[in-house]
Length: 379
Length: 166
Image (cartoon, rainbow over all chains, first blue to last red; front, side, top):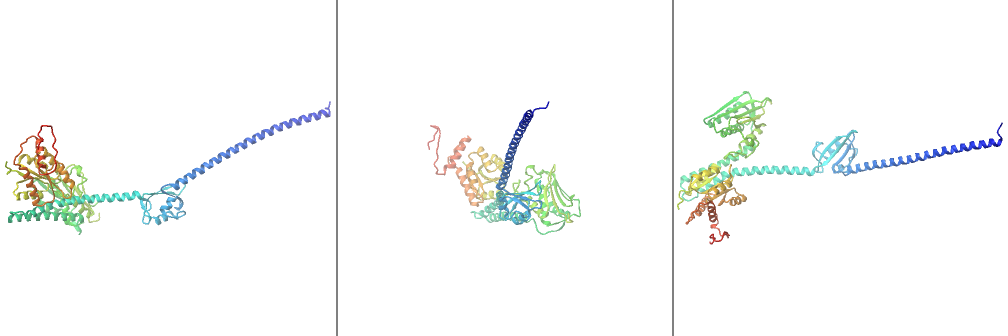
């Protein structure tokens, strides 16, 4: 049986209604999904905004920090041109800086400076310490630290130390001069005492002259110390030692054995023979004076492995006590009651004037001084 | 009491100056002996009749001040004069503070040395010699001698009845 038209319409209406309902549900779902997406987008956008603000804040803080650094900062590209710099860099090196070659800027700001190193002097009178470091991204970062104050302090300190040394030298010299001067004054003034006979006067005059000669010798020693001898000639080292021996032999007392040895007979040096002879003689005399018993004293001429000439003065005496080893070459340093402390200082000065060096060797027994000099044949 | 055999002891490390000092004293008929350092001086003090010590301040080994304090222990009454370097007031002050009887500034002439030595020896030759063996008493006598020819006011303290009346 076929459905009545009314039934058909009713059927269609309910189908349509169901479809509408279904559509309505789907559309509601869709709009819900859209709303949630929109919310997510808004949240993401907010997060992104925050992140961007943080990054900008960080960048701003960094650049403020670099601008406010007490040192100069420059960023160079791989070619050495200045990409960025802070205001202190501008103050120290002078504008313009950007796009300039750093090497050119530096030679403009610090003429005569090596570039990198400690305490570069700038044209402005300031001193900077320049340090450079390669960047991972290529190029370099350069840091300029203002060390003017530290530099001036160091200069001041060095000058103070030099003055102190000079003061000690002057005090030592004053003491050396005062003693013979006191003796000379005593003898000279004795001549005017009542009841002096001719013999007394002659003796006082002689003693006065003796003290004055001692003063004169002191002045000569000081001059020798200052100059170290001037004229140079080719001298055979063994002949030089023979001269020393000639001076030394009359002074040898009983129980002293002197040996002269030459390992290199053809060894010659350019020297002022009298001053070098007196330097070696000084070392030998020290050995004689330090010894209280029998003594073996040896003067040796030899060629060092590096070809230089060496004069070795060695003995089997008491040696140099460890605690004064460092000081024996200092002017006016002495352990002797009558020493003036100039002897070894003169030896050092004379040897150094010959482009050589003198040292006290570390030996188990006695004292061994080595004078090291450039040999005439090159080395 | 006779002092004819008593000598002046000169202590000086520099041999030439030591000889000059002894020569000068002898030129004024003052018997003089000498030592190059403090140990030598103390040895002579034991064996010889010494009336006055004239010592350098700056010496290798024990210096003048150390010698002075050794002498003060051995013979508190013995006058000691220290020779100080020119221009060092602090050395002179230190010398007096350490108990030196006097000081003389180097360099000095013969007459200054002789006058100083004679003055010290004259102070020592008191007409009424006080006899004392106790080091404390000797120190007191030495102090009294030192201030005797000085018009500074001195405060004398002590127990009642110990004879402070002057």
